Length: 245
Image (cartoon, rainbow, N blue to C red):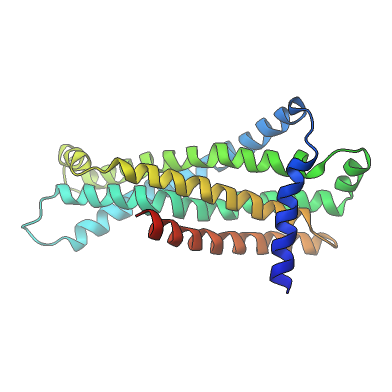
């Protein structure tokens, strides 16, 4: 019963964002603030993870492809498809679930515990649209951009590891990137990025917005938000791969 009540409360929160719309200018500053916090705040960790993710993929792929029959361009093809299809959208969004999700849940939870949300509601402000909607929209704007950056840096990381490690030359790696490229894979990765961005922002906002108690409950809500987001990301990843691919 607790699961169904949580789902119902989540849907009511999402509905509440549109029941009493305010002036759009009122939210523009908050939307820009959330976009900067989510995007620039996560840029460093995404860049580091993406480069090493592509580098490790290239090294491990070269280690497994021991047959002399296969051309070395196959290494870059495998790195390219692995990074685009799975590593960049899924792994990066799981990391962002911990970085961004915990921040959103903690911020809203602190506002709830300190009664700032209650004060805004007394003033007649729709807190669901004013506090939750900019976070969801900011995530939908910035997280797909971070995923695109992760694709580029992941592929470049594989190129860097391949050339520095003597696995294959940069020209050979570049030729492999152009062979058998399927543009649909990029589109599929962006579909996953938008889906995961919505999951991270909305689930974290739900747990933070509905915190009851004190500082201890804020920490618990942040932890539950991250765990739930990761589980839903993996479940959505399977469903999208099954129905689209």
